[in-house]
Amino acid sequence: MRHTVSVLLLAGALALSACGSQASAPATPESWTPPATATPAPTAMATPTRPAVPTYTVQRGTIEQRAELRGRVVGAGERELAFAVDGIVQNVYVTPDASVTRGQVLAELAPGELADRLARAQQQYDEAQQRMERAMGDLRFPLRRAEIDLESARAVLAQLLAPPDPARVAAARAAVVQAEAARDRARNDASAIKNRAELELKAAQERLSQAQAEFTAATQEVERDRNDNGAQERLARARDALRAAEADVARLQIDVDTARGNEIAAVQAAEAQLALAQLALDDLLKGPGPSAIAEARRAVARAELAVDEARNRIQVDPEISRLVTEAKQSVDEVQRQIDALKLIAGFDGRVAAVNVAPGSVIRTGEPAIIVTDPTVDPSLMQVLVPGGGAPALVAGQPVAITFARYPGATYNGIIAKTPADQQSASLALSGYHITFEPSDLKLESGDSAVVSVVLARREDALWLPPKAIRADSRSYVIIQRGDQPQRIDIETGLANENQVEIVSGLNEGDVVIGQ
Image (cartoon, rainbow, N blue to C red; front, side, top):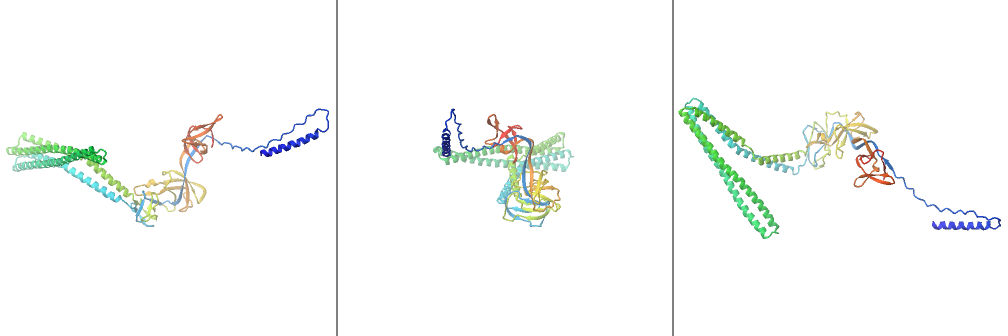
């Protein structure tokens, strides 16, 4: 280009020179100034035009966040039933067109390891229950003895109050014999409990001695080689075993002391009852007196107190109660998981379709069996939207519906049922059932439909279009302040494809520079 311009300038200069020579040929009396020679303008280079930067004004209005869900038309009485968990179908108990009743098992998934887990949990629960019953039995023995003593004391008192006769004398003698037997029984029972406790203590002491020896040996082994990890682990185990053995000895020592004290108390109480019985007999033979009757009354009171004390002592070990409770919870939890493997009819109806077979894999929420409710008018239609991937909607929520059979028309609808409406451990609706108005549209089962639902709405909100907003670590916009653009950080809220709510950072009427 530069070479071309130079050639043009040179040619123009030569042409002007030729013209100048011809003009100066005739003489002229006056001085003449040649006209100014026009300098050719340089060729202008094309400069690209910079596009105008778009701007956007912060506006105030309503913002809605909507979701469009695809569904299909079904009979209003048609219910798609789905399993509440994933799994492999083990059994299907119904066929199309079969009648079903509420509570009937329609199909079930393979239990896998749940059956073994239930058996183990039930065994642990049974063992805990048996332990509880044994503990309760041990606690009831003193109560029963106290109740027997109370009955005897009341009998003595009644005998004293009755006129003396041979029958009463015989009964008093029998009371003595009974008291002697009670004493012997108390002595034998208390001695047996004490002996058993002492044997358990002796065994625990032997275990403690063995644990101490093992701990000493483990300690010496560690001292010989502190870098021996195996020795360190054996020392830790020996220390734990020693602590457990010490705790057992301490606990069993308490049991022995308690058993010894109980033995003395039980024998003393039984001997006291025997003495009272003998005294009652003696008094009866010589005739009742005021002091004897008063003593018999006191005996009854003491026996009643003994019964109350024995009854109050019937408290199960909290640890045993905890084990029983936890074992029962484990059984219930595994049973709940097993129940979740069953697909159960929630109403009386007729099977319209079976979508699964033994061995097939089924996912949560996938329609397994379709059942028709005969109580619903078969001519009524609803829209069914699959629950998987749909946002959480609630019954009674309004929606807008467009049908493929009626393009361009929009109809109002209401969510009638949700998967949560019949969610249980064994049964779930597979989607959302939506009624619509008018209900007499000429639709057929299987027609496609699009459901539009407002998920959120803001009234009188500030907003900008999405392309006006930038983001790095947070959202911001660019505004013009004087000669310089300025960044303004903002907080956004509700958004749709055309609007983004401005929660803070801008005011209505602010102008934002777009990207």
